[in-house]
Length: 293
Image 1: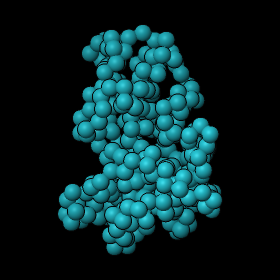
Image 2: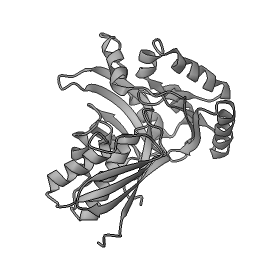
Image 3: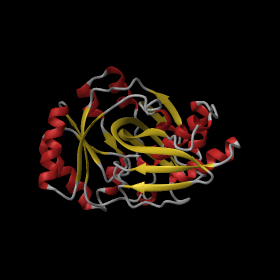
Image 4: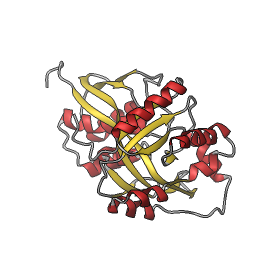
């Protein structure tokens, strides 16, 4: 590969169609049961050969050193594969940060995939998932994307046939949320009833829109709405569009399930017009992301 060559990977965001949060484990993580689906909203990751690891970020204010998951992913990859050299990584951010959309995790997954291609290391998807799990709970899913029911701390992945006909509006109000703080709120509710994502998995397998809409849930809404009124107010505001609405991950982004992409584009435009400081964009669910270039 010439020094001028580069690898490009799509880093697709994800939504949680259902998310149950269990108790804190001895390793500090929490057991979860969730159905995640990749969506068309994505960052672009470019990787070039280099003699060291460096990361540049465009479109968001993020760390560019070891505190960036993309940097950590590259460092772990070279350590585990024994490949020499490094990589110059450029992240073109389109996914809102601190939003529950998995942007950082997807960037890290894209770096692992891209370095695997660039170096010819030949690691299997399973091995890439193992590496990703050391860095973050959502990264194993993001290695291949599509749709899956994820359990354990997120590393137990059970693929579900993806549903690529769901039209969405992704909406994030003008404030971020801290994931560790959100999990602390879960820890303040011991003995709570634990839900599971089985109904949502069935709804997706059946491609039953009404069943899917009735199966939407996110435990973080019950944890965070009482202490963050702006989140609850956001959901109330978004319901005026007359379609199912759910917060994704630990927030602060929401998604709306709309009839088609035309309606998604129109709704996103209306939200932006009324709330110009919010992120609002049409998107759709999509399948396996591991071969996108």
